[in-house]
Length: 322
Image (cartoon, rainbow, N blue to C red; front, side, top):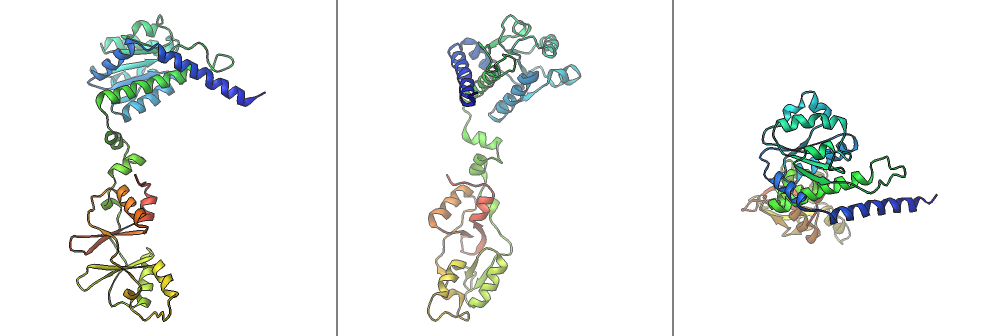
């Protein structure tokens, strides 16, 4: 048994079905788009079994791409959840055969609500096909399952058709990257577009020393600060230098090194700093990476330290540079 060949044949069967379905798209697809665009309420997806699982995924995709949507199980609808359907909603029902018992039982009640019904089925002459205001063909020549029993090709096609509707709606509505990110604030795109320096910078217990602090004292404060760095300020509390653990290692190699010298002696003068706390964290990460530093100091307009942004905090928050 050549399992690789079996997998390749599965891919080929499903790919052929997608290609054929793409070639037969017609005005019904456009009608479905028009119906959804004209929906003032929600797009409700329903289906049973594997169709229901695909429907739940479709509802999630619609909802995250600008089309308010949720999944309604037909059995639950028969036992009270029909009340979730409003007069301004549209129903999108999925059934490969068009005769799923639980689904067909709710169709008369759906028509009683006098709302649009989009039917995804492989049989236009089925109960679902008859009730549907718009029919979308999800018929396939054969399932990838060798027995023709397990929904495989048909579910792949149904999911692809749902994606096609969602993408077409996104394009029609002018749905932007920023809109997508606003629905996914915890995702990488949301973090890139919305998380700012002020959301991640540390502002408390900062390891700040003055220009008269000895290196010996600075090392203690560096250890307590847990940033691998101390920030040095002048008599007016303006940032003037940074002493990092790297600076300290390099200092150890210098002739005449002494712990009693001022920390400022071995510190990096004129360190990189930033004042705009509204800057995107992803852009701050770019600054850190380009400057080859680990810590970006945030100051006010007068140069006083108000916080620090460490590269580890950015990475732990899932921030990525553009």
